[in-house]
Image (cartoon, rainbow, N blue to C red; front, side):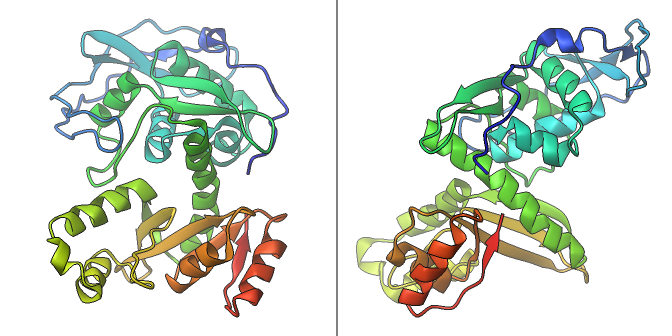
Length: 311
């Protein structure tokens, strides 16, 4: 997951300069949805109003962009770019090579103008983030304006939290790792007939759990009360603690019932006690191929049986 990206050049805003826009009109939508997650602020009823713009010829056939009036400025985007904004918002940070692989199916000719256009308009930020084990990775995130624009489009369901801005390098890489983990798990969910996946990051779930625990007085922090709080959030109490997964995916199963899966991205740095706690919590474990053998040995030493899936 922390692979070195072979293309080291940054996206040039000029990559998007020759893209054409469309004078097609699309109904503007008013959104009262509020930004959610770290760094988010309440949104006002900003309206996105498509405007008529000249049409330019393009050398290749691509989806034309539509112009939207947003808070006194015009932004020109195509649907694929709005979907990219949504992906970034769900995970806070994504490595460029992973976005190309999963969102654009490996098509560099599609991702380059899309990302360049979003950066040029100040909706997305790009940064080379140092990594302790590998070469720096180029990550993307929403800007504050990009986050506000995304919520105003109404593209993301109200119950899906979205985030923006780079965090500390370690946290930024962790967020980016979860994007690959998500796609690996969603493949299995969709293969079993699941649909409409919703992402819940670890710090979102932590906020909910700690909110309920904070309402309790210290003398009520008994194991039984903690177990009730854990069960309320679909978690388990393990030796007096409520372990939290790196990522939760909520979805509709084949019969239309709500289901969920809790995922943990295990690395070579996991100690035996940490890994054992995650197993007893019932999380699905994923690891890089090079880390999986060592983690299996740790489980054997703890006399625990659990499948470690490869990313």
